[in-house]
Structure formats: structure tokens, C-alpha cells
Length: 461
Image (cartoon, rainbow, N blue to C red; front, side, top):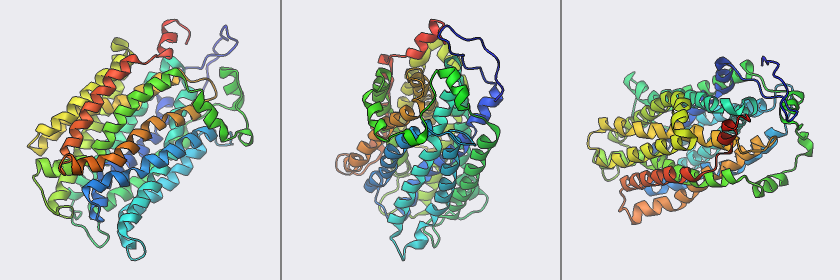
């Protein structure tokens, strides 16, 4: 990584050099592959599990496995990546491990039905979802820390914006792929495996893209060495063998004020997102397409699923474009104002789905959701990174994941019961509630203390 020779600050530390756009892109390129995989998971897991025999009210309980695993994996990965120094880097070993495991899970999930003679397809599929999400977390968490490792406060909004742009590109292609393959003649009828060919081959392509994107970051980006890190932070990380898992609990107890406040914002945001990912396909199938009865294996349900997957591609495309605008928007509205505006737009987008009768109108609802998604992937981390002490970026980014997984777990436990017993089996009302939760997130972010923004105003970056 080419470095300038900045003068030493009054604290005796060297300020981090600013990176070029190309360096930032290569540093974050692996996220394109990660989100390609996430898009396939988010857009298609519910219909895969439904094709394996899950009822709609059971879906949240199967989806709950992913955040449960993430709650355990992310802090551990963050903790150990903070204390790992290898010949290939500090965070890169975790990128590679996660990429290999994730690619394998993407290949096996749509083929879980082929093993039904050994283990019921539904349980095999749920197990593959768990392994897939754990692997995604292994690859993903260190990327957040890497951006904060390498960039000064003044570049972090741009850094996370570029990362979000790449996330958007990967998600757009991943979301559109099942529909594209269907148009190319791949079957949409469930075969012997229980999953249509257009879905299976989308997951195979996703596995390849995931691996290639991670390798781009591994080969074309660099990390600071321990000596360089000490120059910028005044502290050399402990060696990995000296790092105790118990330190995670100590760090949790010392959680910065900003993280606690952002926790409420994340709770509302991710409760809403979980409902959207789990219930949108069935909400559209029943509320927009008018399907009823045992429709999970019908071509019409697959068409509704393709429409939802494409709609998710729309919100990811909007997010990719909007991500590049975030630094400019933040100059006018501030970091908190930008996030509040974006979350409010997402809430309106989710609520508007209730009023849709033509499936083609879904893409308009997704515009607001895209604004929210771009901001959710960038602004909380921009705000948080300015409040984390040196040497703790990985562990606190991992602990911050609690505020992502906890609302999903709560939703997973109670969401299906609410749909069945309160909403009368109509998942569209779960989407409406998600919209209101997103608006609550927009309001709560206005009360967050942004230490990094204050430092920039005081010229201390």
C-alpha cells in the first residue's frame, strides 16, 4: 500500500495517509462477492425452504438460525482478527476461509433435497442455511474492520460508501440472476431435488463469483504491518496466543456510548429487514398475485418469487447508486441526518407494498428501501468507527453485530406466530409493521452521539 510521509501530529502519532479510490475499491472488492451470495440467500431461501415443505409461519424459525450463528461467530472473528498477524495479512486469512466455506454452502443448499433419503430435505436445507450464514460472517466481518483500519476519519464515509456501492452491484446481479436464467430457458419447475433449475444454477454461479471477488481483495490490496499500525495508533496489538476469549466480555462491558445508542437504531432497522426478507415472497404471492391454498410448489409461486427477487435487485441497484452520493448528502444533512432521511424513505417504501395490486409496481416501493439499505450498510459503521478505541476495531465491529442479530432472533421467535394468529395468515401485515419499525429507526438515530463528526469539525482528524 503506497504511503505518503505525513508529519507527526501533536500526539506523537503519524496520521493515516489518504488512500486513492482504486486502493479503496480493491480493499472492498470482496464485498461484491459476499453480497452476491447474500442476495441469493435473501431472495430465494424462503421459497427453497417452502419447496422442501416448510409452512409460511415456520419460515422465521428457520431463518433465525442465521442471526444466532452470526451472534456467536462475528465477535469471535472480530476478536481474533484484531490479534492475528500472518504473512498474508491480518484480516485476509478470515476472508479466504469464509470464501471457501461460503462457496461450498451455496452449492449444497439447493441440492439438499437430493439427500432426503438420509435426512429430511427441510432440515438439511435449514442446516445449509446455518452453515452458509456462518461462513458469510467469517468473510464479512473483517471487511468492516479493514476499512476502519486503513482509512482516516475524513475518508471513512467515502470508504464505506464505496464498499456499499460494491455491495449493491453484487446484490443487483445476484437478485436478478434467477429471473435472467429463467428467461434463458432454465426450468422453473421443481425437479428431483425439489428446487427449480434456474435457482440451482444461480447458486452455482454465486459460489464462483464469491470466491473470485474475495481473491481480488486478497491479491490486490495490502494491510498495515504491526510496525506501521503502531505508528498510526501508538499501540501494537497483542499476539494472538495472548488474546483471551474472555476479553470479549470485558470489551462488551466497556461498550462506547455511541454504540449503545446505535444499538436501538439497529434493532428497529434489522427487525424490519428480517421481516422483509422472510415474508415478502409470500406477501406478494398472496396479497398481489392472489394465490391461496397449497401454492408453494406452483409455477405461479415461482413467478412471484422471481418478481420479488428482481424487486430486491431494484433496491440494491438504488443502494449502489445512492451509496456514491452518501458523502455529498452527509455534507448537507450530517451523518445522522443522512441516516434518518434514508431510513424514513425505507419505511415509506415498505408500507407502500400494502397498496400494490400490479406486481410491476413493486420496483417503485423498492426505491425507498434502496435508500435505507445503502445507509444501513454504511452510516452506522461510519458513526461507530469514530467512537471505537484503537486496537479494538475488529472486536467492537463484531459485538456491534449483536444489535443486528438480536432483533432478527426476536422476530424469528415471534414473527411466525404473529402472522398465523394475529394477522390471520396474511404476511403482508408483517411488511407493514416492518415499515413502521424503519420509521422508528429514523427517529432514534437523531439522538445518537457522533464523536467522529465532532473531531472532524474541530480539525482533529
